[in-house]
Length: 326
Figure: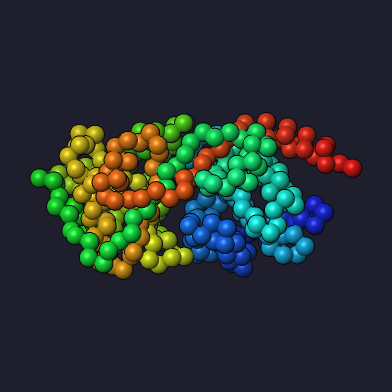
């Protein structure tokens, strides 16, 4: 850990890329506060290698690790995303504010002018903290999950469509990426989504260490890729997996391809010992919400996205600091 910053009994440490013990502490603390979204130190290290400009922080109060935070370059342009969690027994002691101040400085280094943050639905303290520093709600990610039976049925693909594992057709990866590039900008978000590079997409969604190859599938019409879905491991819970992007070519929509692909993922996960699948979508994404409802996914607490201009947050931090002076 490096870059120590102290504020009374609060200390913030920035984790180096090779700080294994720091990543283990970060993951343990994150999992304690957000058990529905567990991570491991290995996953965290892989994420950081893919995005070396991002920052991870640990916070201590009275020498005890009390919170963790992240400053991540968002896939929405001009934004740095803040993840900020503090153990309940250490809240209201200035650590969250200290994290925000540090992350605002990182956002400036990123060259961004908007700060974004996520708060789990029902976290009244988190929402109050966001409002205190001028962040307003811009989006709700609808989190859903489905419990799996041990004998989920195999799907029947639509007429003329074949479903195959991506790992059996590596020659079609470029075509699958082109389909993802078509689908990503169509997501009903409040700002246009930046499409990842081919190499990053392959690592994160198609063949990387956190991708479950048996559940990452193509829908083919002949040799044409008309559908793609990915399934991602959650290493902190070996019985849980997460759906990635679902993409279907515009020319082939409303033919049941997305439903068949997801049914195939459900059947594969069931055969391979998984007992729950999770995913998220946007409130305005009616077609995908309908697919998920037909497949029996049930709601979990939503993930609320807040944003504010960085200048507004910096002004509020400065005003808060003036009020806190003796």
